[in-house]
Image 1 (cartoon, rainbow, N blue to C red):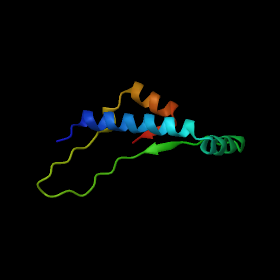
Image 2 (image 1 turned 60 degrees about the vertical axis):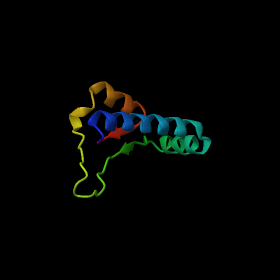
Image 3 (image 1 turned 45 degrees about the vertical axis):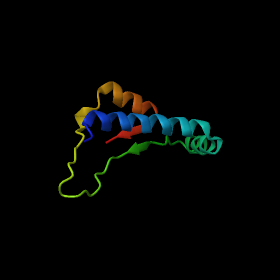
Length: 83
């Protein structure tokens, strides 16, 4: 069974890896710069969606309050919003 803490940590890991991948790819960096030159700031979001499970398989939800203000600031610095 996965806990809300595990879910939160998984989202953080995903956000960090996306941030690393974006910063390591010159084509993505160029595309972001082009958008910024047009006067816009790209904003990426991670949204969790529950997948259908068997009736006997438990599911957990992650309330918005599960992320601390510090967590949200870190994700926002990476232009990632965890909803």
